[in-house]
Image (cartoon, rainbow, N blue to C red; front, side, top):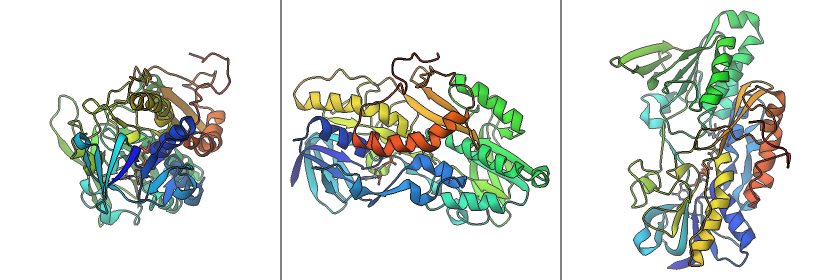
Length: 411
Ligand SMILES: Cc1cc2nc3c(=O)[nH]c(=O)nc-3n(C[C@H](O)[C@H](O)[C@H](O)COP(=O)(O)OP(=O)(O)OC[C@H]3O[C@@H](n4cnc5c(N)ncnc54)[C@H](O)[C@@H]3O)c2cc1C
């Protein structure tokens, strides 16, 4: 049985960030990373892949180039958690023990939960930026669109990057409107399971204006249940407050699907899970409610924040300081405020940089009104954020919340 002081499970955005920060602050730490993938993707870039701005290759780096020096990389997945014994079993049957565990496996995409979707995806205009295998096809489908309904769906929460399902609708709408004749024979429909356009009221208000200005047909409380590829129909279950459920069938020429998401089974079926299936951690300390030497970060963690890579930027310094205090036999005082950021792209060259915390208060990093669509924030999304991800966050750097030091936030 192998033993490590710290075992990090998952080497995506969260796992690499935590491993890098732990090694930066304590170089002598014996740290192992359990991650089966040989490629690492910058998933926030997939919206831009689907819009023809980035290639998929621009979002990929070999995992080996990101694993920090001195970290033992075990190229397997976790197959079972036994936190009472401080043990993890790997997919190859190894048993690993640890002094402290970090769970960072991300979320599972439930393509199978929608009837007909797995077979339909990747052809006939059915696409999804949520899959590395199909994000490039979104751009192909937009370019091949000849009119009719372009339908964009959003499932019930929680999902990663709750803004992404509508960003691609705005980008596709822009692309369609470049050809006025095409625009007259097209309808862009945003069909979302949520009761409103966005969960944070400060940012929902300008988004409602965007939807109205563009003439997008927004349909709320619409849950996609089936894709009928042969007849090009999307089937929704619609349940509005005070009304009984009903079925609605929307014909499509283009269908962009965001699938429902859940915690991976290996986590959901383990003693680490809360009733939701996500890891049961304290929302401020990121420490497990029942196993104090276990922490969780990123999409698999059970905090009520908006699940984004930006949230990981806020979580990692807190988790690392609390974990090191735990290893030293003390109690950490790091506290996560729920910071998350969703760069709400509202068209080519336009972005509302939505930053907020648990209290749904705006927490802008720039001294500008964050509710305004700006070209500068598009530039930040396309250039600065990917640079920050690869060169600062994944290297375990401090969390830069104010990009212009010393200047107060606008509000
Ligand atoms: C289309 C799209 C757009 C997005 N847009 C944005 C955006 O604009 N801004 C933003 O901040 N965020 C955005 N996100 C969200 C962001 O990518 C995620 O929130 C972030 O990647 C979460 O990091 P994570 O490490 O928790 O999960 P991931 O990055 O998904 O990594 C999880 C890792 O765990 C590994 N793993 C899984 N199971 C096991 C196992 N059993 N054992 C070991 N390892 C395992 C996986 O191989 C993977 O490497 C977007 C995501 C998508 C898909």
